[in-house]
Length: 350
Image (cartoon, rainbow, N blue to C red):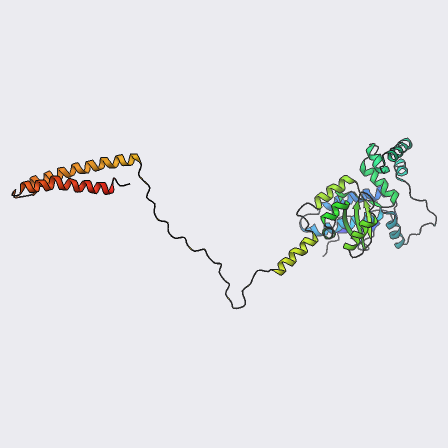
């Protein structure tokens, strides 16, 4: 039996599957409070992340993406209106126009009217946007200022530390484009590409992304600069994503010059082996002075023993003593000479 993650993990009663965005985020129907929408999303996101390991890895990742898309839709003024109308909500004909960033921050009691006026003057003098002026003056954190700007523009705001973008979407946009325009593709939601950025993307960037996604509409999702830079460094680290052009070139090169395979019935050729080197001739090293001294001593000893041997032969072996003088000359002259010659040829030779 398939696991009902909506009921088991989020406590959503049985009913339509998948549930609508409000039921998914545990909100009242047509709730317009952006802070409550973000708060509920953050709580549910943390709850589902507990199951993001082991056997439920795929189910948890799919549910996390679904929660993120629901939050991004309901915090985007234009998309929320369209979604609510699809659920049967009727809006009055006259509505108040969008509030400015300073009005949003004043209503949320982040700044006073005097601080708002001071930030406007600083913005005009420095040429900065009002959001950046508020952050530089340290009146509000960058996240709060970006959220207020999102309300002014009618866009959604995303905290990228709580969200995992879709890998398939990020693979389409190369690192060069992401870094050049400081954008991060998030999801394809109902045929719309959601892109995280610090400033609302201009027409040129939008066209660049539309071409890569076969002409789908592109929608900006605001975030703070710090979290965007960290997310780009994390998801587009060197070696993580191959550029599409480089990937195509590698595939073409592999197709163009594949390794030669042996034909059917043909034996594969063995790689040629290098010829064996001829055996090296033995090199006789010259003897050292110490070795020569020892060998000379051995030669003298050998000659002495030859004299002793001649005496013994002359005295006890050679009989009768007829040619004594002749044999004595042979034994005592020739035998030591032969011994010395042998020693010279072997022991004393360098």
